[in-house]
Amino acid sequence: MKIYIRKILNHDITHEINLKTNIVNDFFDGASSFIVIGKKSNYKGTVTINAITDPRFGGDIRNIIKEEGDVVENDII
Image (cartoon, rainbow, N blue to C red):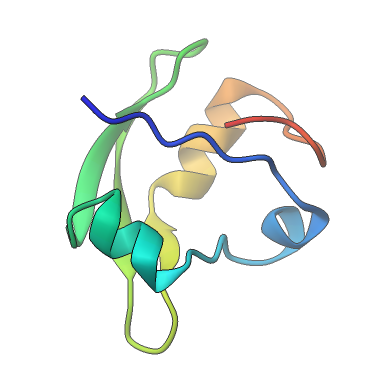
């Protein structure tokens, strides 16, 4: 199992969470969606990788973060 760890930047809170193409290809094996379960909330949702122009998280990512509690800059998800 691979675990993706990310430090939240202010831009991630106010905008969509962007990814580098090599992260999508190497870490997520080019997947277009995957299931995420919140560690604290146990909330389960599908996160998509929207890659039409530049890769970014979509789908339930905002709901999952909301269910985990307030996320602030420098938090780790």
